[in-house]
Image 1 (spheres, helix red, strand yellow):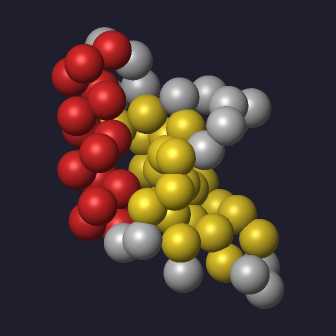
Image 2 (tube, rainbow, N blue to C red):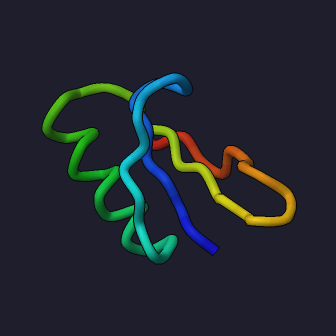
Image 3 (tube, rainbow, N blue to C red):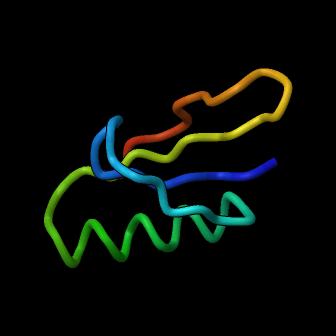
Length: 55
């Protein structure tokens, strides 16, 4: 399973190998830019699913 960070649903994703890495990078982006960060779970069989919004 892969995880992606996005600032907006239509943005280009930032790929992460684990959920822990995605959460860490999302918190860092949130602190740096002051915007909500979306974390998506990417499943090759079921597609993408929004997991969390870091705000």
